[in-house]
Image 1 (tube, rainbow, N blue to C red):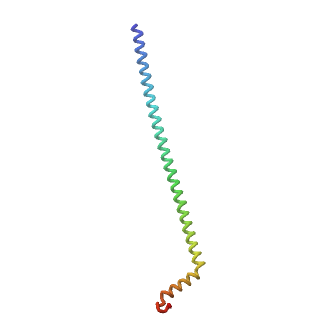
Image 2 (image 1 turned 135 degrees about the horizontal axis):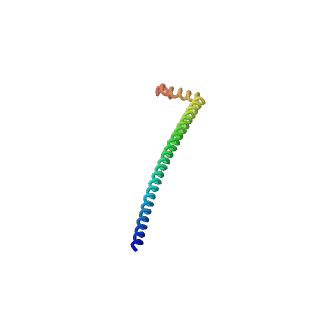
Amino acid sequence: MQEIVTKVLEAEQEAEQLLSDARKKAAELRAAADAEAAGRLQEARLAAQTLIQETLARTRAEAEAERARTVRQAELEAERFLQENQEALERVEGEVVSLVITPEYGKG
């Protein structure tokens, strides 16, 4: 009888040891998985940050190029307007100068 009790106690101890070992192994695996997940998350953050910075730089360059094109187009249109209306502008300019330099009593 004592032998049976001893064997049962030994079996219980062995089961407890196996259970303890399994818990330790599970904790180690969980810690390793957490560390791997954290590493991958950090890599993903860095990749996203790099992508955002590259996209922002490209967008800024495109916006600057568009701004330069728009300014150049406006300059060309202003130059064209002045060339097309040079005579009329000179005529108006002459009239304004005449109005400014002519005394009030002579306008009449």
